[in-house]
Image (cartoon, rainbow over all chains, first blue to last red; front, side):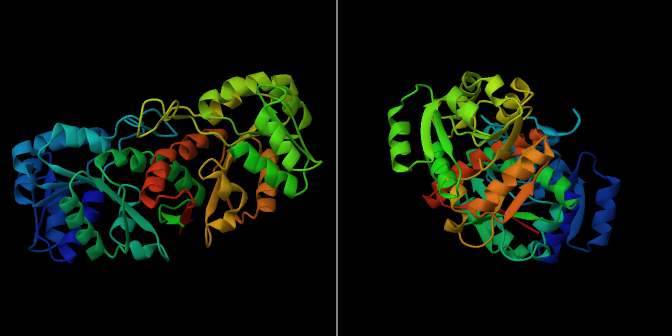
Length: 205
Length: 205
C-alpha cells in the first residue's frame, strides 16, 4: 500500500515509476501499473532498482534488508535509496515493538549493508496518505529527513516539495534514523487515541 | 535542575513542596528552599515522599529506581508519583541511548516495582523550562500523560493546567511511557538542530 501510494504520486508529478516485487508479475503490481498509465511499469526488485535513479524502499521493515539485497547492490550503486520503512514487529502482539532501535536503526543497517548507496530516511513518521498529500492534515507540520549525503538529501527534498511538503527538517546523518524510527510506538498510540492515522508531528518553537 | 524548576513552579501556584535528595541537607536543596519562601522545605527522598500527596520523580533516569526505592514504598503507598524522568545514558557518547526501551520503559519499571503507587508519566518530552512555562513556546503544543489510574491522571492534569497547559493528551495506560520515552533520541537531535531546547511537539490533525 505504501509503495502503490507513493508510486501513484510519483507518476502524477511526472516521473516514470517501476514497481518492484519479489516476483516479476506480482498481481498487485500489474494492477497498479494498469491503473497508472504509460509511465507506470512493474518488475522484480532488481528490475526496479536497475530502472530508477531514485529508489524507494516501501517494504515492511522486517523484510527490508532481504528486499534491498534482492534488489542488488550493483543495481543501486551510486543511487539514492529513500528508506520509508519502519522495523515494526506486530508478531508479539500489542503494543508493537521495533526489531532494531536505540543503538542502531533500519536506516543505518541498510546504509552499512550498501555503503555505495546514498540512503535517505524520510516519510516514515506518518501514514502513506499523508506522505503524498500533506494538506490532508491541516496547517503546518513536518517531515524529517536524514542521511549521510547532502546532495542526496537535496534531491529527496525536491521530491518532497513536489508532493506539497513545505517544512522539511534535515536531522543530519543517517544515525538520526534512530530518532525517527523510535517515534513509531508513540505514533501507534496516537493512532489508537484518535482512531485515525491522519495526523502528523509538528515541532513548535 | 528539573526538580528545582518544577518545585518553584509548584510553590508559585500555591503548593507546599519538600525537595528530596539523597542526603538530608543537600546544598542545592537548602539553597532552593531559602529562595522559595515558607512553602518550600527540604529533606531526604523518604522525607519528601512522606510529605507529599503527589510526588515528582525528577531524578536522572538511570538513578530513578534507586531513588524511588530510597524514598520508600510505604511512604508512597496510595499516592501519585509523577514520573518526569528519562532513562538516558550519556556514558557511551553521542548519540545518547536509552537504558530501557521498546519492550519496557522506566515508567513501567517504577510501576511494577511499586504496584501500590499510582505512576503517571508526564512532561518528560520537553525541557524543564517549557514544562512549567508552556507559553515559552508559541502557539499550541502538547503534553502527553499516561498511567493506569484514571483519577491519578485527572489530578496530574489539574496540576498541568495550573502550569498553563491547554492541550493534555492522555495516551492510556503506563505502557505508553515506551512511546514518550522513545521520542527522546529525536528530541535530542532536534535540540542539536535548533541549538535550543525551547521547542515542543504538537500533534496536528
